[in-house]
Length: 199
Image: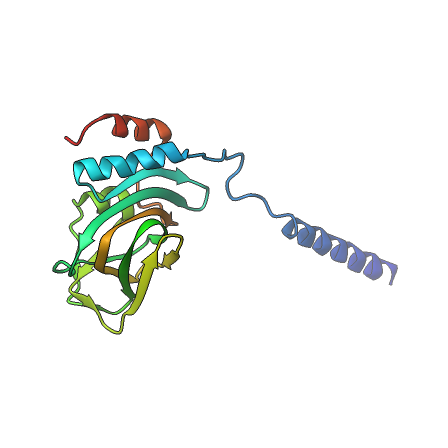
């Protein structure tokens, strides 16, 4: 009987030790540094966009353990009506917009009309937001009136479509890439990019 009791106590102790290990989670990014991006650098991207007629630019692309997270700066000029097949959708990368300046109408939704695969050679596919689709429109889309200070979260697989931009819109983009589809980009690469005119 004593052997049975000691055996049970031992088994309970062993199970307790295993459970205790489960209660001691470890960081998913071990000893990873934080990344600081000064407002001057972000503003330099906006100035470059205006001067060189650019739209989307990737500032950083960081490995944070289980995911990549990228920071982009986007500047879009006046838009009276949407361009053909200008709905965008990304298979793996979710996006968060924080509107810095300007205002626009954005339509979002997952039900894409006339979906067409984006070319794998496209710069934004290779470097910014991975594979996905363009489409003609969004069926039963939700309309958002974006203005400075607003934030919108666009999950992977959700179409997004600027249908009107009043004068311009500038926003900081946070891209969440758990499948690590896009290449890393550090401060040195950013500074090198900013120092060169559009080629």
